Length: 41
Image (cartoon, rainbow, N blue to C red; front, top):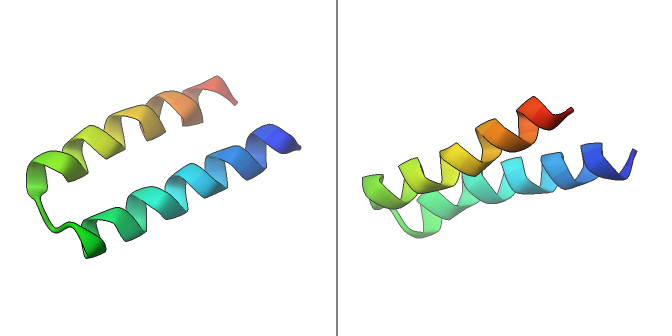
């Protein structure tokens, strides 16, 4: 359960971060950890 919550928090962070910091490079770096965290489930 906690892992799902953590994944959702990571996802929401990754979605809001580009809005606050619209730099394509940073967005790519954020998407990579998310892909890994989703694979763990």
